[in-house]
Image 1: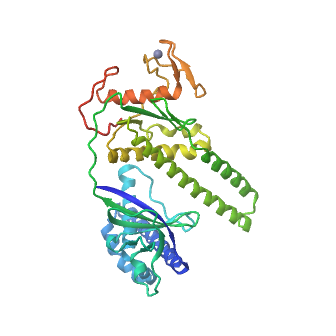
Image 2: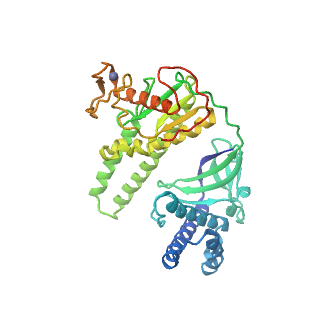
Length: 398
Ligand SMILES: [Zn+2]
């Protein structure tokens, strides 16, 4: 089984937009109401209220606020479940404490968990959602552009409005797939990947992938807009329209980034010469963001994290081994040939020569070769010997 999300653009008409906004608002209200309730209850009793108790008290709340009846109760319950998950994650895995949702937030969303009532009509480009079906008006289906058909069983649908005011439906489906049998790990068909600030990604076979130019262009534009904004009077018409431009640009950048990473991860997991991909776990690497210019950050932090995630699940889909290693200190400072550590290496040195064995190194290629060797060594592979490893493990954690 694999879970997959299909995202489509929605074009609601005026009446539907009102209904969608009511859904966003009501789910936001429910989220905040129950978050406050959880906080108060914890303060008073030092105990947490489970989601079942919260869901039960929804009935009472609906009596107090009749307008909640316009919204599918399943969507409201899904909101409570989301809140409960966020709350649990905070205690279990040290994630941030759930925040109150604001109307001013750029992104608004709600979830329809009623799998059977979500019906895409591919022929007419329409999407039926639970509460929209029951309205009496004739054209109650949401206009939705299906650029590809859904394959698999629909689990749920999340409707959202982005910072640029565009509406989307993200339909989660479950596909019945058989994962491919993974090949044995061999030195010859293994690549190591090094993420960098100047070059986005370097492979141990010497290939380099730079951040696409449009990131730099978008970033420059963004900086210009921000500067303009500072000179405008807060709340003025110009100020508001400038803010809208900035929101739109943010959305555009995030779409560009996703597209770039999707294609890149597809390419890496479809290379016939490659059967094993080794990556350094960047959640441990502290992201270097302190010393990094915002330009690099736009693709950097989020890009590395998301790319690693994509390569990991695509490796499973397409039958590649995925090895993730913990951070090991001098990955760029260690000579890949003899193991000598060059402690004085600075960020500006792109090429360096090993004092011990005399090898000349491209900084990033050397680092990616080290990532590969380190991952293979962790699996019991000895450098210099080319024999297959008898294991199907897909993940080595540091
Ligand atoms: Zn050396």
